[in-house]
Amino acid sequence: MLAANLALRERYWSHDENSVLCAKGNLANCLKSVGRHVEALRLRRDVYDGFLALFGRAAEPTLLNAVNLASSLIDVENFDEAIPFLREQVLVANQAFGPDHIRALDLAGWLSEALRRNPDATRADLRESESIILDVLQRERRVLGPAHPYTKTSERALSFVRKQLAAA
Image 1 (cartoon, rainbow, N blue to C red):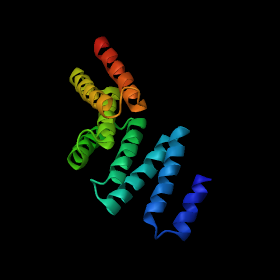
Image 2: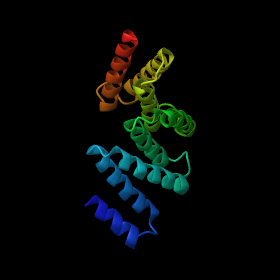
Image 3: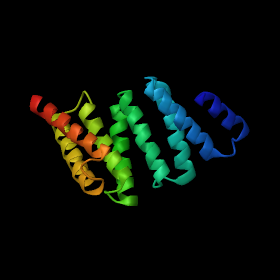
Image 4: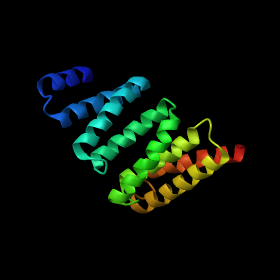
């Protein structure tokens, strides 16, 4: 159904780029949820590039799609692309909205995740991951509250990276 929705939008409403990009993003989300990560990544690249062209790099819709693209890069274990991309996007989000903004927190969390999940991660990478997620967690507790799902996710991420450090 999502593929049909995208096809209709591309055929009849191609002038509405935002609508087409949102339909592609929805299809990418569905593909990711059923484990079709390579296909989701292809679509997410298109969606990110489209939002970048429409709104520029420092716009919230672009940064939201940067989060989605980064998560897909991590899904396919493309850490060589994911980590530098996330470093750049964190800087953009911090400059545009400040480090307490939800997009800046989200991107920093994904950077920590990419550093932690990289099979080639060094002890220094794991320490950086720990430092980043600790900062994110402190900000989320203050901005979102201790019971917020993002805060809980960051608590688990901190626990994971600390276990990896202890085992390294």
